[in-house]
Length: 458
Image (cartoon, rainbow, N blue to C red; front, side):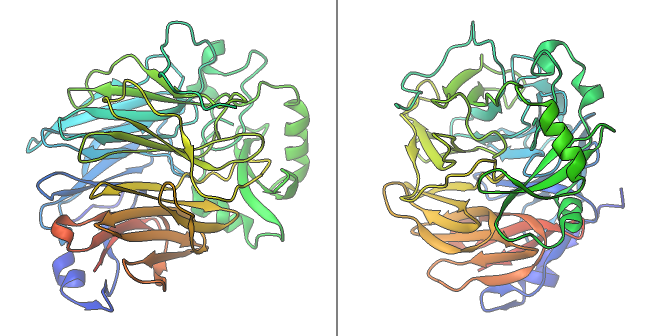
């Protein structure tokens, strides 16, 4: 990895702005992928990201104007990076914590006491080995220092694991399709997933190879070839393959996997009171009526000022893959029946691989998500508001207003509170945004040409 250096954002960016935006994106790390951004109650801002097998963390103590030299948190064999999988960061008053997925189907946690130099870990989050096989998770602290982790769980045997009351709404591993072998899921069948799971290409590598999307394209999926490498396929609304890196190989994969067990992803939760060193018995928050939520879309978790816990996920009900929101008022012991977000629906025979964003400010819940290639802003109980074409949206709320970042092709787009006209911030992928303390604006982070970059939003 290239040297990671201190970046003086105050000189390059924040001191000079145009139309409420800092003029240029500024590099925090010369190499990195899948950034996650968080802040503590003192206004310190952190960014966690991955690079190969390594996990890094950089800290700003001045509203994002400067960041420390990125420090290596750990080396994690089998670290999954790409398509919204990667290190997840949450910053509490006592601990900073990171949870990251592995190709073995586990979630590993690290914690650092605020102000300390050393990260402790790894500690395993999921209590059934290999059960976090989709490699999609999120974490959040509440004001009492409880750390919540949610993920898409792929275990099949449910004995000995309690479900949430009011959890069921009435009537390929890691981001693609995965051949788990004749016995079903690799981890539960005794397979060495570390040895068999293919290496995931980055989104940039995938999209460069895909090139121009064919008419009618609804999404891109990945599958393992016979050589152990991951291959892409573009599918339409009905799941029909429109374009593939190796169409013959994809058809052979599909034929081989006819009759395989269907996805069985469920939303699970575990709680830690010591920053991630020890975790409660995992509990099922939700199982879809037909057996699986949308298996390749990352769930989101936040807590509000009253320490309510909110989880957003993409469901799979009768062929429709819409976003749902559920809430706990008792520290994650029980959850409400999930509510569908938005008035319209998306019937699609495939996974959009896009989970959206969730935030709470001044007691108001706001969400952003993608449907049919368009990004929507949605407040629960109200009609959704079309923002524009794109995917991978993120949201940061300030009072009644919202900052939204998303990808429109290769461009990073942004919308500020009170504006209806998006601004192009540059090129890149996987943008994330967080509000700055005292309502002073927001800070965006994304990957641009393999670098981790930030930009102030005002």
